[in-house]
Image (cartoon, rainbow, N blue to C red; front, side):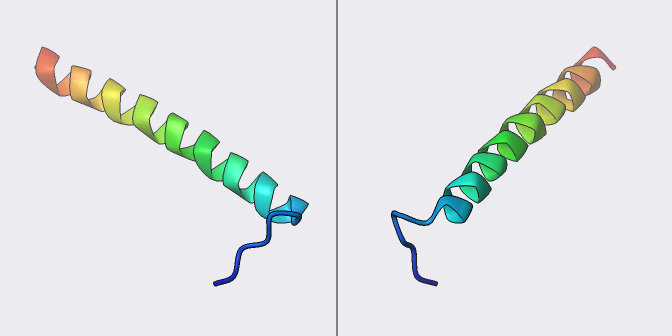
Length: 38
């Protein structure tokens, strides 16, 4: 894979990936707390 700094589409995909990671971490924390409460 080649990365170009001046490629806007690549930049937005990276931002979307970061957002997905944040959402996944929130879901994981929620599940973890749920398991702890059991």
